[in-house]
Length: 351
Image (cartoon, rainbow, N blue to C red):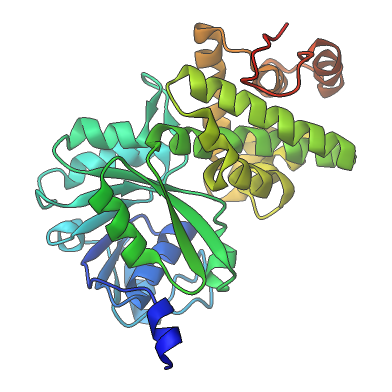
């Protein structure tokens, strides 16, 4: 290794890592940590699946062919996974997030760093995942990991960027250390709320984009949908105390573009199937993995109405999925009723 190459290599601290959730992204994050010489536990609820993953040294259900690093251990023993962990990543669906956090409460070290990678919102109280961590484990530093991160491309070692958001500088440095590699770059942001809202909200618009594709929408339509989606996201984010500039970054527009243009996105695939006229329950059952956008849509539509936030795309998708309104009728309303001003936060008000 040359001196120049050595100076560019990330410095790893040998932290003990726990990743809770054996889905595709949790597996990818755990393996990156382990490849970076951090002893890492990947926890799964299912004992048989955990044992199979440990025996085969891969998670063949979610990321087949992606071999585990030597220092990665798959386990269903939650205590063993978290008891000595310096860093705990929580990568379970939002519906079970609080339950898992409560389970680790008596087990986790007092100085452990807690990181959410879940892109969703708890309906009760419009609670973000980081807020659940803060409520249940208030003495711990908390961060949010989010960005345009398809696990399939991460495991293929394609160039990928992500964002770690926290108001704790040590947490940011630690996560950059344990995750950074030649293929995975970790950017910092102090706006935890903005990063987390962007990650949750973009799932709604991925459904809309998939639906538009199924209906034959062209590039003009998709360009309009993505930019108007960004306007809605930043509008709600600003109302909820986030920095609107965060939505112009990797965790905002970067993740939005990714999920609105690729059928690797579960939410995009849900929208595409809806656009083909299929029933939502059948789509979700066939998918086999959680599409967070469906649950997020319900929560965000209610919150937008409560706060009087102008979100016509959210309102329109809600009407299609839950009120049975024809897509053509909703599309017409969007075209004649959308606000006249283009760019948010330039002093104009919408009509």
